[in-house]
Length: 409
Image (cartoon, rainbow, N blue to C red):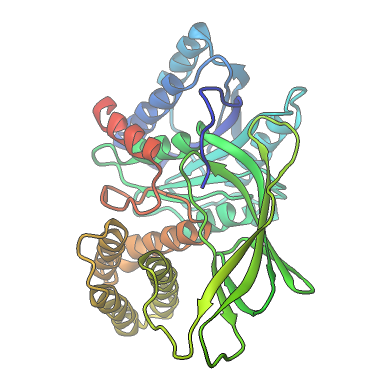
């Protein structure tokens, strides 16, 4: 878990790429302006913001600007003047944002990110998949029922820890999505987190850590988790094979260590290795600790969502519905009605089940499933429409910012 060690944080360099195609007119554009104004108000002197818009062409409305009071007022004037145009060329928007970040002279000890919002399908000459994103996180936001969910999720998943959120033009949905992303970026506490586990009197059979990179060297496995927000968790489930025993004994099964750099720079910290010890018995104990059972349930639920999405993508909606129904049954069988994680997972699968329908899957269900898959694989919150109960992976600041965003809207 990432734990804040004080009030200081590193500065944030953020480039927003905003869709201003013709379909963004009316209510969509007004919601975008509101969401951007909230974002501006949450940044301060140590942060820098750049605004890029795209339609058939791209406009860099401002470069990275340090957010003092005068700059905030200037940004609000820029936001108020946003107008729609024709075309949706996401590729030129991405290229421009990356050039903005590449041109920085000051970047050491700073957090950088791209926030990309679109409500339509890309129709530019070059496909966005041709863009080399590098190690910059790209957080994508799909607005409405006609955005290209597969494209936006693909851009986020190809980037370094980017998420894909979905929103509609009702209520404060887009503002919640923007503010949730910003809450994490403003609370980053450690970077380059790596966890290493080494087998001792055991054999590592499987390591579940979402889609984070794993490296196996001899008897050790190292998982690269990247950056952590304040109070954000990364759970890793280890499945071990142990030699049989006939009587009670204590066994050292793993040696565990991790390393990280403090947010904002600093020396690499390497944790003193600890040994994980279990008490063996002649007969097996079949009850997992609740936390272990919950994490396995979360991973299994995420796998079921991915399976159902793939079934629905080939028009097997009945199979997809059955997959989600079975996942709901498994969660109910855990008999943990008061457990917040299990409640949130049940709500998630119930909502997806409602969306796996001929009238709603392609317009809403696929986007919801793709957002959920990436969120669970990263163990990082991503907003999904107006469903405020989907908070299983949300850190406290996300909840606070989301509530403020609703009031601001």
